[in-house]
Image 1: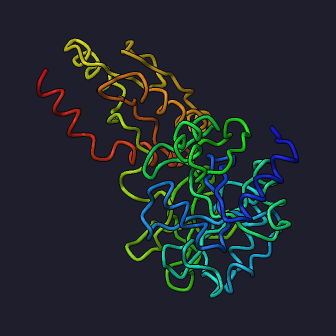
Image 2: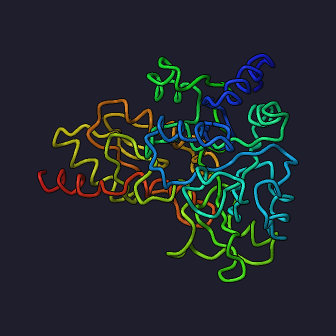
Length: 340
């Protein structure tokens, strides 16, 4: 899906003036600002309610000069760029001294990504003649479910659109991947090797096939990165996740008690107060997950009950997002069950 050239020009003008523009990527919609303008980046944090020490990802155009952003681009980064960019992979590298620390939460690193969505690429090529970068976390309030359509963004930032804090929303249809990019830390190769900070569409096995070694699990000293807090991607309605057999029993008990339960599932299960059935493949499930959470958040349920997806490497990104969405809500389910 494309947008008119005049809309791209208008969006680039807003960005170059220090404003905010929401735009589609293949993962989720991003809330973009000029990555080299600290005042513009600060507007992202203001609009999202994002903690100032939580870094954002810088999006660049295909063929961008990465040496502008980092003085240390290791061979592994070059290999991964050649294999997966444009695409849903973010690389954490050392930040060049002239790049504002506003994009890194005060750290000496920077996250770089080249999205594959045609509207994102067109915008990045229009903005500063393709030589700039857009700091762009997901276009939602901090901690909420990420948006995968332009309407999700408009709903979330209605007040900011009215006030002018958010200048424009580019509509590129529904995001294809549906969950955020894989994040790999390459800033400590000599001491820690490559480290997986956030799983996503591109797996550790795919990365290992390119650079010759599998990423390690994130350690306590790893750089902070987007979307890695324990509670994240969460709707307002509490979320609980259970295996199939447990879901059947829980659903029957809660519905018999008159509880309003929304259900997200992939196998045959009894009907709930509201439900959505997702495809039992990791790609299709991820594509529909956030839109489903947003829909179930609007049905007036007391709980969103999720049938736990399968495990395995292909499901790592989906299970990561659901675990964070459900973090802190297990007590709600126990309260409901104890009262039944």
